[in-house]
Length: 293
Image (cartoon, rainbow, N blue to C red; front, side):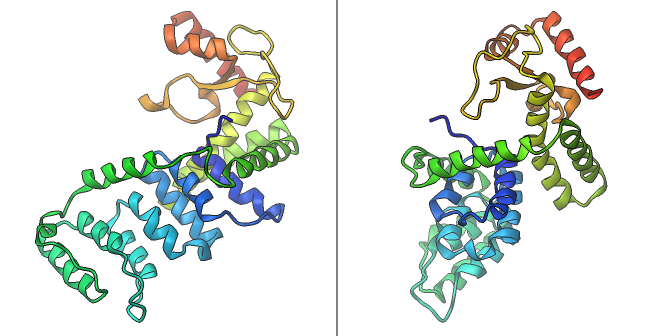
């Protein structure tokens, strides 16, 4: 099974599961969602959304066992540590929480202060830990090690959750007209421009799943390069086409409806392998035409 959820799909899942009265995600399923996030900006949006929707799910095990590996903000680290640690209960000896705070601290003096605080929770550090401050690279190495331990296929419940999400997503978008999808995109784009950082950041990430659906829907099942029908139907009976960003996101391209087209797998590979000027011109024209739909 080819399983992959980007942040925009995870955010949509949070919106749809409540409508269908689904059970809340298990710890290992939250871990899988975390696994698919690409950088700290995405982790921050994910964390904020969890607090809005599933605050009670931010239990000690998820924070100290998974989420903490991806926190790159010192103040956020402190707040999470405060949720986990309880001076009245010595059974919680979350050394990882203190380690992470030390790695994010900016001075040796800060590190020493954290180590002294850790002793109140019966957590001991070797003296060399006083030199481990300001170590973001070490944090990112720990993130990589955590990812390597994740096995998607063996993650209990997640393949079923993913299949359920695909069904919910398909039903949701079938209930919307092309103009409604376009209207939602334009509204999200305006929110990104007008709102504060937190809302703007969330709106920008949320937009991606709508962009993909718009590109596929507006193509009517026809590849926008070779102009042939999609090679097959997916499990939901939808023509299978892949969404391509004309100006690559990795090179500063925008996740907007005038920068995406729907391509058959062959043309998508061709675009990336050959990067022919005539292909670029053709799909650029098609993307501009999509704007008029």
